[in-house]
Length: 634
Image (tube, rainbow, N blue to C red):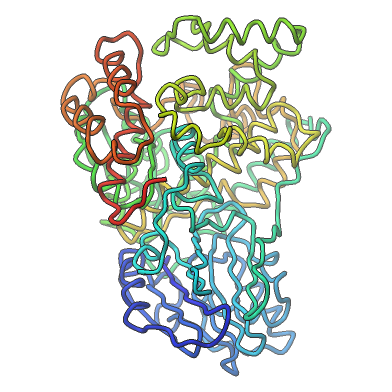
């Protein structure tokens, strides 16, 4: 796993500052501590940091084709590279390394922009074609690996694995994007393609960007999307179970190729346990596994992880984390480069730290909830949508109005929160799902924003992100639509971002077999009734794993990788959050009303409403502002 930087003069062949390129590259040293490399020529600079996984001896980057006309810097793993090598050799291409990186330059020569359609894996890369005078940027289908880019006012294009590399450039505009802040407050992260800065974008998952020197400014081109069509799909449970096991085993098998120690995360949940069982079946030997234990039983799954490890003879490593360990708060702000409010980033950071003691590559169960319909919110959304369809439109509008004045019961179980249900019924299907997942719902955000910031938004609402994605799958059923929306937003913006930055901070590569694109393409053709049965999420996966995993692993209530935020803010973090919400740093942005922030905190401290998710989002936004020098208010 690696990190890269590219600087490209889109207008001519001005020389690239070697010292600046090196500085940008070294900002990502943690992504590739093994080796570094630079290439400069008129108008082009490419830099790379390498974490050696495959072909340790000769896989250095930047890497060239035979005649030195095509060069690439790349982050990721292409799992079918050996098949592609054979195909390309048959077409007359010569290979000089045994790395998957070299496949990219030859695939570009053979297939051009469509080369990415041949790759199976996780990747982001920048490729320079000297003869055609063009730079090609590409990102994998699900957004497992990151890629940021920015066009400066002087025509220079910057690209890099992490935002921190781009912010090293003195010419980058640090103006905060008001729309990105609205999205952050709603989702707890900034969804693709925005970043917190107006002048910087993320290349969306499943997209490429071809930039020709002297040509017009291009738009990202989609090369893949999940084929979500209408219809019931496969309903044969026995056949679906057999195929699911075979496909998971195959997705795991191709991810076991490495020349360094390899292992797995094992939380004790269904997804990670599924991956460990498959690794043992297809690998034929015990697996190195690691888990985090918490002192608080409400957050501790270590006993379940130990149960799976014992069943499969895994070499299991456990580290106990203090449930009141919030020491990483400022470290996270520097790690994620923009506001990021998933508190599970802290235990994720710790489990990556633990894994790196013994392995360089770890497989994880990330993506299982999105791919196999595991989130509890899917059940809430299905029930709410079924009710919505039975109520006439005028009554739904009335329900939405009542929801705005009904008292909040945020800490209660959702079925007791009449306000949330009434508000949800007042929306259409996409708006209802947004109402379920929003960290700060519409009415709360508008209460917190200053009038000046509301005017800056010009009526923009973060639900637009979901509506734009939903418009691509007009015939999808309710469950498939919700899964698709998560795969396009929550998965790359939150889950995969969390894992990439936390793992790369420790020079650890994480592979995600449950997000194999061929597995997902098959799953989308399986009936929703097999993915979720009543309140049982991941029904098909659990039935498929019954011969391989204990019943209490499969059917116990979902726990998650949580931390005790509500207690922190009423105890050890109270002074910290009070200081953050009243800080000059936050006030200078002109985004939030000071009195509204104080009222939000008072509601939480008094125990009237659990505002911990909103408070954490605000705390991390203030930490981002303090960490990011030179930020310009929106």
